Image 1: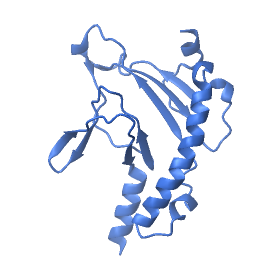
Image 2 (image 1 turned 45 degrees about the vertical axis):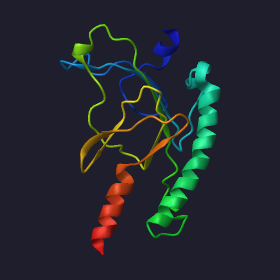
Image 3 (image 1 turned 120 degrees about the horizontal axis):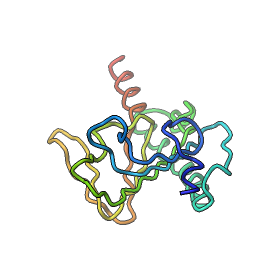
Length: 172
């Protein structure tokens, strides 16, 4: 609790934020989860803000995700018919956010909701599912469950790419 209190907040600004269940104060049903968000923006992050219990792992994740991001941005650029460096040159790799979510035991599950229907606002979302699953994607057939695959990552194209691609595609 002491570690959580140091980074507790309701704002998703910069740095490190621990957010317990959302909606407890203003909704009839709460989103029952604990979230740890670390923004690794181009601005300097005080790494001592990251809880020591996960600091080394998050720094390793940041190094690995930067390399993965470069590969994915290159492939996506080429897939869009652009130079392989185009999305990288547009600064699509500058901001990184890690969001870890934990769903603790809930004594009254009838008063809770899972994540609301949403799109991802960034460029890409890299998601590692657990063995339980629960992730769904919307397609022409409606909502489809994604079966978790051990060791696999789900790569989701975010709103910034979708909007840019739709805008540019309709401009021609």
